Structures are given as structure tokens and as C-alpha cells.
Length: 328
Image (cartoon, rainbow, N blue to C red):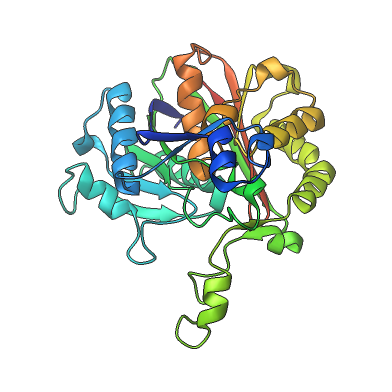
């Protein structure tokens, strides 16, 4: 059975901040502005569930489906609404889906959570376990950022959500998920992350360490070195898995890690800059939400016409590489 993207949607909080103003407020010189992220959206009143619901309803409308048509909801996000329970059941409830009608669970592979969730949903549709699936990534990336310690890192992130509705492709349609690939490189596990919030530090007996490790940190040089060494090979393997050559690819929708990271990706892979959708300057790095959010914008720009071959590509903390090959 071919699995296709039936509809997409996205959501943003109402409030945004520009880099110039942040530099003035924090007295950081031009360390925020030099990130080349000009603006990012930040949740104030909105919750992670609010963003997920808005993006999901937009995707359902695009797919001409109702919430009650879903029998699977996967939340693919780097940071959940709370550690326990999972976030997906709360998204399911926010959509008005009755108890027992659908399965709802979370997938976390940080920035690649959406790609991981996409593969799982696709496999479940393909084997007949489910008929219609919602994959949604809703991220409040503006929390726990190191504005004092690493303002140039904190400057990269913004909040947002993106969602896909998946289902069987029409028999005559070329639309299909051709391949999904993920590979991990844990030798550089410590390159970025948030140490607290799990079992690593006990809140009661290691309180100082818990607090000290509660903000995001990143060593960009380590990540750049790894991608320089390994990423192009990963992309070639993904293309081979899809049965494509690089010249077959019409569009690349990458994880919007940073403007510098997208420059790096273009240099490494050899894709033309005009093939690569970049929105990071206006929205920042929305963690796992960045790929579906960018994909939805690409559709709005009429870049996803029927039959086009599209690569989703990204990297994540851990460190992992991930991607998917789609025919629209």
C-alpha cells in the first residue's frame, strides 16, 4: 500500500521578537543579531497544546478530513508538555476525539522527532493497523534557553507547530513516501542537550546540579565537524534507498537548524540554493516542528505540485541524521 501526505498545517504564537531589540534589551552587543535569525515567535498566552491543535485542525482541513476520521495521533516533539503522561492523548482530547476511538502516543528523537513519527505512522498505515494518522510536532523552543551563557545559541530558536495527515494514496496518484532513513552517531552525544528533567540528576539530592543543567547547551563546532564528515554519505544512502539520483530531486525541505547550518548543508550536498527551502531567518529553529512547518509554507508557495520529488533532511541532538523521500 502506498502512503501519502493528505494534508498539512502549521501554527504560530501571536507574539514575536526581533534580534535587534533583544540585543538592546540584554545588552549583548550584536551577538543575537549576528545569528542571522532576524525574528522568532514566542509563546506567551499559548500552550504547546494550543499550537498543536491549531496546526492539526489546519492539516485536517487541508486533507478534507474530520478529527473523528483519525485512528492514530503521534506527537513528535523534542520536549513534551510534561514528562508523564505523553502529550499526544492531550492533543487527541483537544481535537474532541472520543475515548477509545484512536491510539495516541509520543515519539522523541529531538529535532528529528517528526521524521521518526512519520516513519512509524507510515508503517502502521502500510500494514493496515490504521487508516488515517495525524503526525504533529508542537514545540515551545523558547523555554530553557541560555540567554546569559550563550546568547548566540539562544537566538536561533523560535516556537511553532506543524502537522501532517497521512493515509493511503489514491491508486492513480503518484504520491507516496518512498523512503525514510535515520542513523545515529552517539560518539558525540554530549554536543548538545538539556541535562535535567530526566533521571540523570535527582531534584532532591542533587538540586544544584539539576538547576545548573536545566538550560540548553550546544557545541556547534562538534556538530559541524560531524556533518562535514558524514552527512553527504547519509544523503546518498537515502537517495539510493528511494531509488533516486540527486538530479531527480526537485526540492529539499531541511530542518531549519540555523542560517549557517543551511549554508553548510548546501555546501556538503551540492544541492542548488534555489532547491532548498529556507525560512529560518524569519521563524528561527522550531526544533522538530521546523520540517513540517517549512513543508507547509512550501505548499503555500506552490512549490509542492503533483509528482514533484521532495527530500526532507535534518540532524538532531544525540547526534542523529534523518530524512525522508516523498513524491507529492
